[in-house]
Image: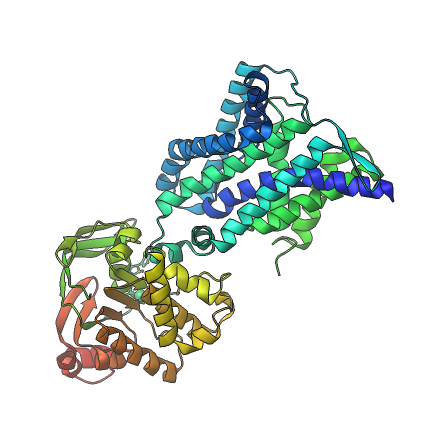
Amino acid sequence: MRLWIELVVSGLITGGIYALVAMGLNLQYGLMRILNVSHGEFLMLGAYLTYWAYLVMHLSPFVFLPPLLVGLFVVGLVVHRLCFRRLAETTPEVEAFEARSLLVGFGLMFVVQNVALLVWGADLRGYQYLAGTVSIAGVGFTANRLVAFAAALVLGLGLIAVLRATLLGRAVRAMMQSPTGALLVGIDVRRLHPAVFGVGLALAGAAGALLSMVFEISPSMGEPYTVTALIVIALGGFGSVTGSLLGGLLLGVVEAIGMHLTSPSLKMVLSYGVFMLVLITRPNGLFVR
Amino acid sequence: MSAALRITGLSAGYSGFRILDGLDLDLAAGRITAIVGSNGAGKSTLLRSLAGLLPRGGQAMVDGRVLPPGSATAAVRAGLILVAEGRHLFPRMTVLENLQLGGWLLARPERAARLERALALFPRLGERRNQLAGSMSGGEQQMVALARALVGRPRLLMLDEPSLGLAPRLVDEVMTLVRRIRDEDVTVLLVEQNVAKALAIADDALVLERGRLVASGPAAELLRSSLVRAAYLGGRR
Ligand SMILES: Nc1ncnc2c1ncn2[C@@H]1O[C@H](COP(=O)(O)OP(=O)(O)OP(=O)(O)O)[C@@H](O)[C@H]1O
Ligand SMILES: [Mg+2]
């Protein structure tokens, strides 16, 4: 029993991070069809900036989180302006745009990764934050993992609340559900697209900040999260942010249990297995009625 | 509240095809103007370019103010609101949420007030305010589209085939509604396949063929004209 509690809780903790990364990417893809394969790099950036703030300015990750979110949001505006806006204007066909945005994403990936390599080097880095142990139902967890999970959940649920309950959030969903309808009611798509892209990057950065509290970080840490995010999006449904939250948590738990029953080295095989199973049996996602 | 529209030298089309080329048009405020014309004449193209969904050349002036081309937000802000073919509702949102978004550009109190008025005009939507728009029947969806446009405070309401796919009784209902909307001081530009019904409620009418205006005048006159009778009402010359 204790073993299962441990597996499920650690699965949920990783899943919370997956969910954050996937929600951000799903906003970008669901709304603008930007296949941003550099998404994980901004997670890495968030992790390094948090590490740097902790080391140099002695700021706790949570104190640094608000400025980090704002900073990455602005980075998102700039990246959208420089890379994707022009691309969208010159490529009206959706399929062509998706393919080209993928290439741009690869380019961005190399740029961000190499900048991080230059600035921080390739070594693993880390810091100690809330490293004490807390016990849940007799099972011990380090406090930073639990806190990271709580923060991921708060951010994820907060985003869903904004999307559902505020007019601005509904406008974002409106753009996803009917781009023409959004134009017909006067929603300024040219202003909201960059903002949504920025929110996506901010979420990736937040996930990175939370990860840096728990694990060691390196410039190549982002890529696997991009892949996992794509799997989560397929699980939860393209364009469904709530689906991404549930899908992320579910994948985390499935991975944790699967790795325990087989071997940790099979982690990616397990994820891909789930991915293919879902694509074959429920191509619109698990939670779509 | 209603707005006059003056179009000079309007051109619009799709990559490569110029559908409208140098169209001039004057709409008087507070009247219903019907546009008739055969399939592919460019009626929807005209409405879509005015609504900022399509790039266009030439000039469009709303009450003497130039409307910037290619901006849907600017069009809605100027009071030019289109109920497009295909409705374009937000299917996974409730009727109420759809209507609220219709007032996206309005301040909160005005949005709330206009929403109540729209619901009063469409009692059936009031009953179903919490139903998902995508799960409604075609006719109901057309009502939602119309109500959503009304929440947006139109001064010139453009309707692209509002009766498409509606049962005859509903068509009459929509037509009556269009008159009521005009009586509440909104200019209406109405494109309809159902030429007889459109001309019956319209004040003025235009005939568009292959991107050109070939006739215009009071609706009652066009209804009697041999050209319109022959081409659109199945009569003989
Ligand atoms: N997206 C598009 N791409 C290319 N050509 C188009 C497009 N939409 C319309 N057209 C062409 O533009 C012309 C005018 O179309 P439009 O939709 O304005 O006609 P319409 O008068 O509204 O016809 P209908 O009565 O059938 O609705 C047609 O020849 C049509 O084939
Ligand atoms: Mg048409």
